[in-house]
Image (tube, rainbow, N blue to C red; front, side, top):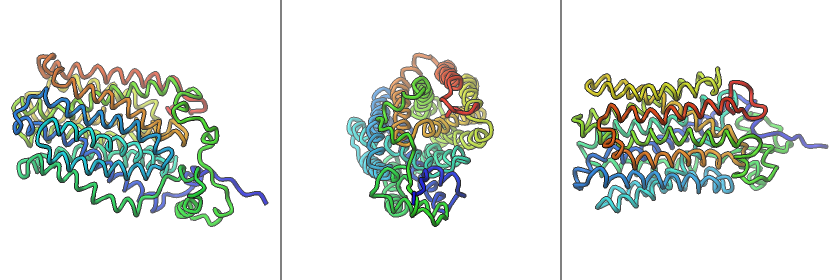
Length: 446
């Protein structure tokens, strides 16, 4: 008697959303909240470091860049490891590195030691996000994948925003060291729950005979089916081709789309991390107080949480092709207009929120788009390398922030200059929309 062959993704797509899937999405959400908080912490404590250590903005720039460079190395290095060893393994390892690195940063005696520790912490930060996105994507049914993964991924931007609110509350009470201690202890508390409650990627288990029984048990809990013991479960058909994950990114008509995706990530993260790294310091230097500065800077990620969720709802209906390019165009307009509201604290807060809604909202959905662009065996590599292109932009942005502000001669021109990369990202997305993958429905990028 022939055994029935079932694709893992088909079982998930044809089943109602289960409690196990909700648990995976919730755990991934909590992980990326902490990832976002620890990523943003250095920007919010920067004014305190300048004051306590008597350093200049230029001396602080390497600490920003070191963390982001570590994220780049971690994102590139951990992607292929996750495709071979499993998403959960790399996620736990990366989160442990984040916890230890952040705790060590709280004990740093000078900027040189802090810079080295931020690189170490960045290695973990670079491994957390792409694997959390991949796990969320693989456990989400296709009919609601964009929305569900956006809700999970929005934890990153929520973590960035919480960094601002928590900084405004804790910095006057416990200082920058206390803030970093909180950021390091939280992942340690979460790690045991992840070990016990977070399952491995179903698509990864489908390619490993050692995980066959565990995979059947998980899919049985998701689908309620009793016939899976008599079925042969397979992952993505493309995995059988044995093509290396890296070459898959450029195969079957994906080359131009991959390059445009990288360019979009580069431009958006250049602007995003320049702002999240330097905006608190620039605002403090312009006369805003600690709490007001933290609240205004937090509007970028908070706007991204709202924008990401709203855009995901709309993209499920209208498709990414119609929404992402004009969204980045609106980000360019919002950036150009932000510099006109510097004398009005409330108006400035609202304009920064608009930048977050458009720019960060687009970034949230770009990461999910990257996960859906590639087959299973190359998915973590595809997401990691797309984020790595963005990390390169973030490193350059964090290094150039102070110089760009001085060269602009004022905040109004500074924000106009920042609109240019957002405009370039919009053009790259328009090119992606025109070059659809074979078999992709009109209105979808992937």
